[in-house]
Image (cartoon, rainbow, N blue to C red):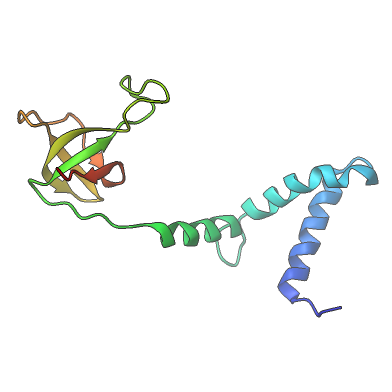
Amino acid sequence: MPKMNGAVEAANKNVKRIVAKMVENYKDWHEKLPYALHAYRTNIRSNTGATPFSLVVARAFDKKVRLREFEARDLVLKKILLNQEDAHGKWALNYEGPYIVKNTLLGRALVLKDMDGNILPKPVNTDTIKRFDA
């Protein structure tokens, strides 16, 4: 049998302790295991000040992030969010526009105006914007 890492053994011990507190009898431990794992992964550790789940998700998320740079006068499309009244059904459009970038704000936000020059009432995050290529 291969020798296990001490950290793995400690994690297994903690999960086993959580499961033991949750089960009513020894036959239902497998039903409680997903809940125990969730509790273990979302519990804040004192040595790191974060949860193991948040550390792994942040690393995975950062690998996929593509920074998008926009400048004034760029033509862009704005994603139609689900809570907007224009989003109806499976075949609805995903983006609306084009819009013109009026200016950029701190924190990756843009102030947009439509093609008639009317400024949109709220700034928009760059993660809901894509370049318009005519």
